[in-house]
Length: 368
Figure 1 (cartoon, rainbow, N blue to C red):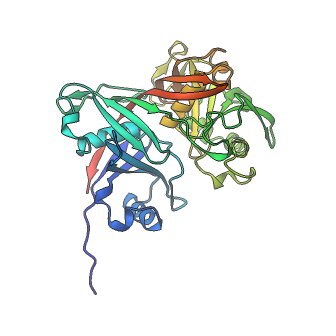
Figure 2 (cartoon, rainbow, N blue to C red):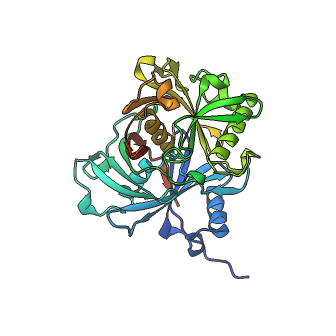
Figure 3 (cartoon, rainbow, N blue to C red):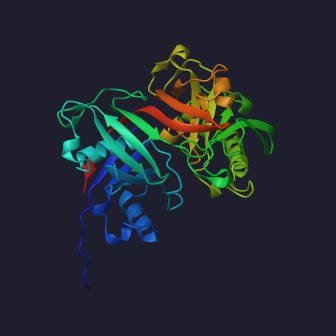
């Protein structure tokens, strides 16, 4: 019996509030470089029996772009990789990975100055510019940025981040309304802002579902009644946004839309005991992405929230003091993240030009 030769796959693991495994596209076997079951089976075999993001990174042939990446979510209990959304905090990590692995030409990497990495996010087909501080040619560890443990601060600029999804096309507000009223089984009418900024996202007032907005992860994830209610709400939002034909089993669309629960500023403690004061935030946010509560805001949730906060009349700006915030401080479970949005009303329609987010990147280790 002839044994198949072993191949060496170099992967980089990044872990903060969730885990991701990074792969260079050129390291993968030929069958795993294109979309399909062979790629998914191979990646799941490498990642193993755990829930994690998988990120495939390659040098880009696009003009004025250094690197591009595709992100998927491995659900070990379902034995599938979901490539439908870009929901993780991975663009900052991709910038760090690209610089460490030679995807950015050396002439574009200044010494002792910030390096701008031009990224193409393949899931949503959008450009992101990540600016990372440097010491020599190494990333500078600047401490916490959005979460309560050390990380490298990265400035993320999302260019024209409104995505095309459902029957709303590429409109920032797919239904044409700043606030929609949903009919939710067991609840009745519920107000929500539905957005296509970053990724399909729906915003709900936490008080409308019996929550304060200061809850930690276990308080939502461990509350079966509240979680089932949020799933029904998400199904109603998906139907209104045209992502599904009717509100059936929400498990059929595990990523979209994400839910962000919003509440007015209040003090709370992070899971690591860090005190967050009400005066340090403009809005409390509790995201539910990929069908699960998240300990930190995903990049796309930050983009969507910043956009909605900048526009008067949305549920987000109303909860955040009844006025728009061009720059907003978002208090999530693990800390505070700051973002700014450039949204303009042109011809009666709101257009999102860009969103700038204070991101962070961590590198856990490399294995082969």
